[in-house]
Structure formats: structure tokens, C-alpha cells
Image (cartoon, rainbow, N blue to C red; front, side, top):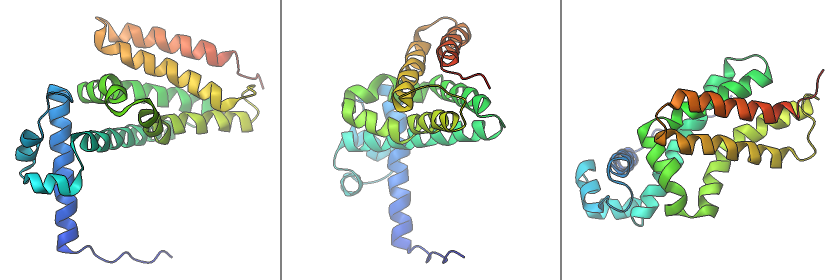
Length: 203
């Protein structure tokens, strides 16, 4: 039986609430105006905190942006897991997870912050680190499970996972610029499925 965690103090609760308010205000500002145009003063006012409180939680605007991206990727991963959990077969879980990720990519906040701006603002190494901690980690785990069960014939599952991830992310990147997102998704998913099929071991 797990030990019960001690209740948080009022100071801790206030600190968490302040941080969350800044994350919410930052997300709204970054989604509406982009990273460069979003102002720290405006974000602090929207969160109803002082500039000092901002700096207590985040070193600068980039640190807040980083935290917003982490929170959004964590949420996307949770949604992917929830969608996959409804499927019994691993291959069906994989398809459901891809579908859930593309659903996230069609949301304006996620599209602008995570898909369009995060890599440029945070740099490739940090962006990849966050991605591989959340959505990509689930894809790798799923393909490893298929390999373990003898349903995937691939020598380097992690590399295959990253290649598939790159294809899925490209679909997400193109979604905001197409007149027919549904058609793009269907065609893109057919291509991803066709590539995966070449590695599928018939059992």
C-alpha cells in the first residue's frame, strides 16, 4: 500500500496555481501571436501575477514556452494512450494512436505552438528530447511490442519508429496549409500504413 502523500501547504498550492496560470496565459499568447510577438508583460497581466512572480517560476519567455510545449506534448501523449487503450490488437492501437495524434495536430494551439514554432524556438536537440519523451516514446514502445510478439520484421525498431514518426509529423505540418485536411490525412495515413505493411510479418 502506497504511503499517503502529505497535504500541500497553502504556499505550495498558491505556487502551483500561479505557475499554471502562467502556463495557460502563455499558451494563449503564443497561439494567438506567436513566440516573438508574445510579450512577458501581457502574459503576466493575463495570468494576474507580477513580473517578479513570472521570474520566480520561469527564467525568461523561452523557458515559459518550453514548459508550455512540454505540457502540450504530455497532454497529446495522454490522449494517444487513451485512444489506443480502446483497441485490443496492437496494430489497431497503433492506428488509433496515429489518428489521435493527427487530431491534436488539427487543433490551432497545437499546430502553431508545437508543430510550427517549437523546433525553431527551442532548437532541434531540445525539441527532439521533448518529442521523444512523449508522443514518439509511445510509437517506439508500440513497435517494440510488435517486434517482441513476432509481428514486426525490422532489424532496427527504434530507427523505424523515428522514420515513421517523421512521416506522421510531416502530415501534421502540412495540415494547416491544405484546403482538404480530411483528404490529406487519409492519403498520408495510407502511405504510413503501406510502409509499415512492408515490415509486417504474416502470422
